[in-house]
Length: 265
Image (cartoon, rainbow, N blue to C red; front, side):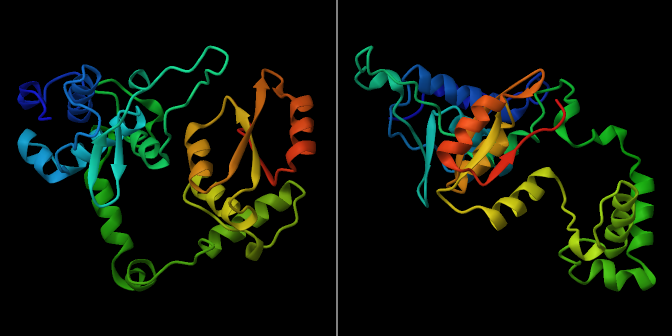
């Protein structure tokens, strides 16, 4: 089935929503109205970008949003296809009805973290707006760091996997001030919380193992654990912290290897 002509209308670069959101919304409407039947193949990323005059990145982000909504599925080396929806399958009896969650893609969720919602501000995005940046100052700093004697160790070689030694020594000194004895060789720095959790998880946990997580918690972490084949066991968290009674029952029943928690809400 060919998509209707509604998809051919030009996207607006001056709209309150991003090009990604506009493109995703158009396909979403076509699918929900059954103008694109289950099994229909979406245009290739390159073809869709050509049709709408956008970048391939915009199309990939839009398709990711559709996948996160459970409307399409990615098939390896074949592209994106419209999925069967719950309303198109026989409804089970009330006694056996189960709430089936939408498929979670860690990649989709992480990409979504860097997609601001239209023209609205998004303080939790993790990146500063371009207009806030002092580009001349940044250019000067980059030239200074990558010039002369600094060029070799900083620009043309791999860094230390554990992190800069000077930083790790400074952290060891700071930890000692808090009564924690640790040498620089025992410290590993990461580029963020997700990187740190990934290093710890891959070192201590294997596929099929169980891990305790906060509920509610960080959806990206849930998806990351699922992608590794790890079973996440939710521990309810209230104003006073995790429910220790539930945690104890889960520990006794499943013997989890880790507890991933957000220390400050």
